[in-house]
Image (cartoon, rainbow, N blue to C red; front, side):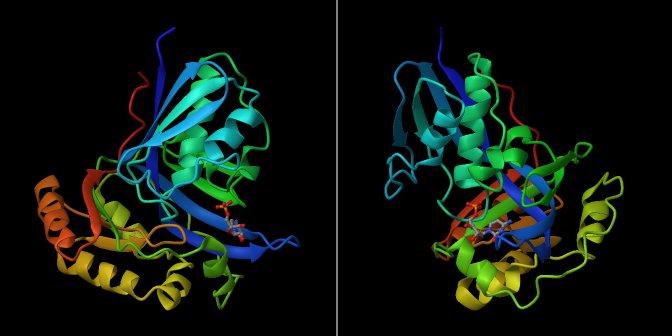
Length: 275
Ligand code: C5P
């Protein structure tokens, strides 16, 4: 059997409202989630469970038993040797471990292992990353409502290289009872998306900014580079800018790298076909 290769695209919270808090301390979210044309890659082969991590962001990512790829495979009862190619910065608000875990579960499903229930316990973003198509995400991540495809919009992802632990960001929030997202209309263009996003927020952005001020510099630089819209994703620190042309996005990414930041030009994209 040839290796099963699954893309683990970067997840973007285009809008993220924090609408309440459960008794167990977890926060209720209402988020418009979409996926980018860049991501990690998971390669699976039948065999005893093992994990090797390679790629630009492999250093510093532990291969221990609690790695989400291994936890996902154990939850599915899957026996596979896993190679994770880590192209995206770690713990940076764009899905990371959840995207990788979802790719492992998708790959194992192609190898005959049923998708296990309760995947949100691996990470709040695992259920939405399992679809890897635009969706509204609610609850603590377990309620996923697929949305129609979004247009292919050029975008730039930027990470300033500061770690912002997610629990610390949630703890630094002022309000946890914000209104839900406004209804999501048909979004046919960058103009449609930017005007809808203007009426939404990432409620984690002010809290993350208070912990990691470089996020503010990234957002200012994205806006100065011609982004039609810029915002932080998830609990940060990665931010995204939406552009009206791929050329403008590429030029912006080149300029943003001059700050010493990780920056990549890509687009809002559907999940690449499995190989
Ligand atoms: O599930 P994930 O690994 O993304 O969550 C990391 C931490 O973020 C949790 O341990 C929790 O402290 C916080 N969190 C939360 N409410 C959510 C998701 C995460 O408070 N809905």
